[in-house]
Length: 233
Image 1: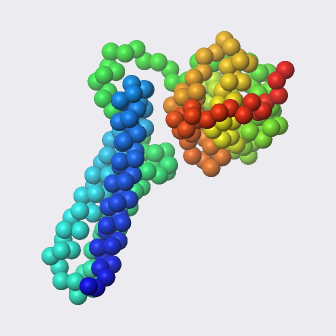
Image 2 (image 1 turned 180 degrees about the horizontal axis):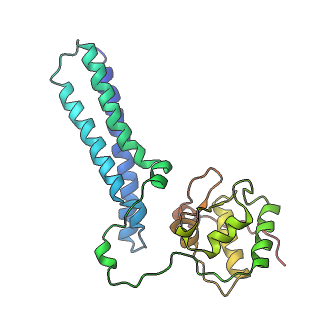
Image 3 (image 1 turned 90 degrees about the vertical axis):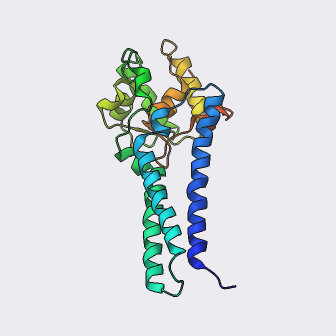
């Protein structure tokens, strides 16, 4: 029995795409079943669904068309493989951060929110300029902040302004336990402000890891704080 390279590559492509679908939407389903807050905007946005359906449609069409073409027609086989690759690219690009950042997404089920009063998208914090400066220098001192990508103005914009009113982001050098410890430190230092861990690290999409990717709330919440981040007074 001869080795069928086309069938091998297409099978790997389908396994990868459908595996990502199960992992992504399986997590959404699990969150829903446990009555936790679901970020519909980041998990079920319409552009992602459109690209996925288009890419998978092309992949299945090419896979079916290949069965009707003689295997010894190598030119056509190469063209089919290229077409299959284009469909695979359309599907896999939806999981990249470039896609999420460049495509303006819409909230799923907008009718559910029609009668709800609009709320400003910010952390609703009351922090003085001196407090922000002290926090900024403390983060830099303990190497918890990437100061090349995050200025004091960036930190101020993210903490105090509406999320869509600026292009600033906070780039932390923190792992999961450090994030929990920072959150504990923050709410103890500024007790008048209610800053939830999920709202800060995941919902806002303005707080990033050292590699430029977003934090996952489910990962942070399972971590044990280190209790050694920022000097206590």
